[in-house]
Image (tube, rainbow, N blue to C red; front, top):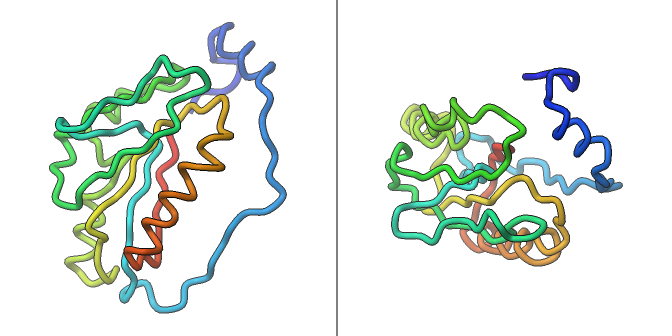
Length: 160
């Protein structure tokens, strides 16, 4: 990971001027059963989408707050990476999508009984949200409702 001083001038300036939001509470629910009995879903902010889905809009002011459902049967390498930020080196995610959406690793965990089972669908958001209000008020609760209705016990987040 690059240090602040290694970032170019434009990114350093952006980070110094960016109005970060502070949240006093973090939702947390302790596991009610062993992980080996849990239903697990993956959530990523890598801006991944399938060939049949609309791409994320990288020109959306404040960031595209929509999401894409990723089926559990997906070939992870066939997913398109559409993350808009230039603040980090995306080479790894283009080489192996499992770095930002580790579904193959979770399939192995499921096969070996380390987790109960993977959910039928997973969720992808666009990271780099500079105006996250709509994401917080609308989209994230909607996805939370989907996870709850699917009976998901654990959501594994890969923030990008």
